[in-house]
Amino acid sequence: MTPAPVPEPVEGRTVAVRVPATSANLGPGFDTLGLALSVYDELEVTSLPEPGLEIEVSGQGAADVPRDASHLVVRAMAYAYEAFGRRMPGLRIVARNVIPHGRGMGSSGAAVVAGLLAAKGLLEGDVEMSSDDLLRLATELEGHPDNVAPALFGGLTIAWMSNDGPQHKKLLVHRGVSPLVFVPEFTMSTSLARSMQPLQVPREDAVFNVSRSALLIAALIQSPELLLAATEDKLHQDYRADAMPVTIGLVRDLRAHGYAAVVSGAGPSVLVLADGPGRRLEAAEIVARSDTPWDALMLAVDFKGGTVRDITEGST
Image 1 (cartoon, rainbow, N blue to C red):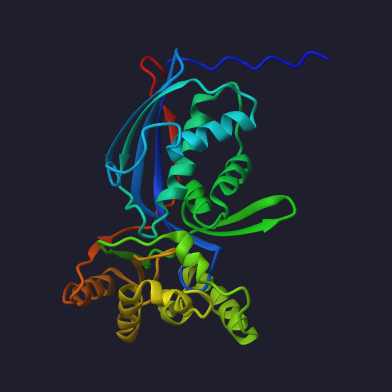
Image 2 (image 1 turned 60 degrees about the horizontal axis):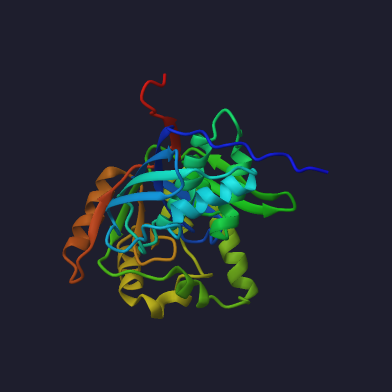
């Protein structure tokens, strides 16, 4: 039986992609909860008539990211094209990176999502990628859905694995929640942070985190005054303390002052979920007096998630 021919790629199309930063875990919601934040990486991707890659990168990590097929955006695009039986065209990619790299703000998840959305945009009219398709492919590439779900869909997301693959539920965050991220100069390896997790934890610690995770959902969508209690954690942050003592020290200091501070993702950034803009400013003032320099990012919750649009000259 002769195999069906692989359709030729559409040439000359240009798409613009925008993907938010994310913060995963949020304290007790280890590998489950994620929040989209108003810091964005942006791409313009053009399909070319001839094979090859042209990659321009500016901003965060520009000196370090590869300019070949090992670039994470290109790898994600190739993965999507292969998954749908399409031949990837030559590409021109112009990337403007704003999300800090290696700081626990979902930069790798954003790159994966950006690549998948770029593929979705370039294949529009030939292949239709659903939200479920995008989450499945992103999770296969990233290994877990806690960062890619909010990057794709925005807001607060609960992500879990089922027999049918990764699933998510998006929730809208209470307007009183004011995120603040303290970004240090140093970085943290996600793989190193995850390697410090024990394979088993005490039953009482598991129960503790189940209760706090449930409370955190209520705090984020309805009762921000409960955020301090709701962000307590016994499953992952203390186990990683030796790898990032400065980060853990700041989390503990802010919590002692009554602020809902947690390690952002795998760290080393610190996320504060303040229950109002005034409280957020107070937290920033405390950190400004510390010996360690921290870049304070006053952010909003991104409710839209990743976007892609056709900007081909002459398109409507």
